[in-house]
Length: 349
Ligand SMILES: [Fe+2]
Ligand SMILES: [Fe+2]
Image (cartoon, rainbow, N blue to C red; front, side, top):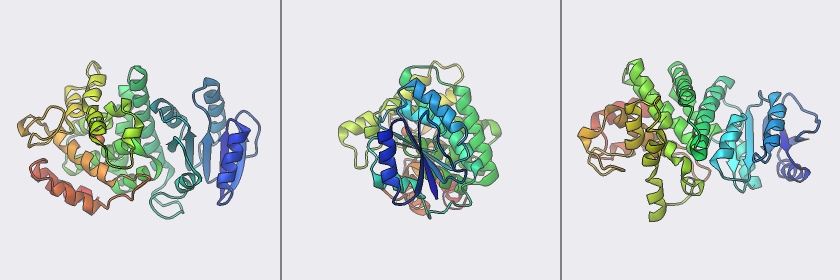
């Protein structure tokens, strides 16, 4: 299997070749220079400094003819939302940022949730819906980081595409595809959107309510855009200071969206209150049951479940049965009949 490598310096190319050549046949290309490409290429690995506009322009040209490659892994030196968003906008299916050693790169190239062969679930169509979703999530994170306007319509359109996809193909394929190709907060937002949509479909929600739900899911963790990735993606337990920083994200998301005329009050409420619990023990406002809307109740269940089943580089994903048992054990915090209805989404769909 061939892996095609693109980098912006001969030293980076040499480093990547050395890391990959034990496992793969490698073709390589210096950004802006002519190269030989093989059409049956299994994956593309890009290591280019995205701080420079001329690199981005050159990369767009290079990637134009490589869009069919199933895995498109971007390696970034900087762990900054803006460049991660840029990488997704350029067509990355996975972005690895910060120091990436050989082991991490090889495991990213191998299948992350199963065998090394492409699974039947892994069709271009699915990667397409997931990539559109990841690009929309990444773009809104970048907009918040830069203080630029958020493309609300673009995010809703991506949510719509995900909803159509789930309605047609079901939840399990979506979970496998997203967990295979995306990581961190982007993976989380896409999982929550898929789970919430499927939960909404199983409850027989009207299209308007479903739209509210998938919009709320797409936007719900927007406030994480300004939380350092070192905290968001920390492998171990968070300390009290880090937890306090994380817990600012519903408020930050609310602030980023509250003056946007294209965001409905229900979606805004969900962004602010998706960590509230019926018994008043949640944050940021310590709301009690009567103040927590149905959209928020559905979103909160989808959010917790998705966080539990996420694939992280440092842990195996929790089986769906186990994650559902944890929801059932959250006595008094979640609406019991809704958790019971969620059973078939969690286990069977
Ligand atoms: Fe959250
Ligand atoms: Fe979340």
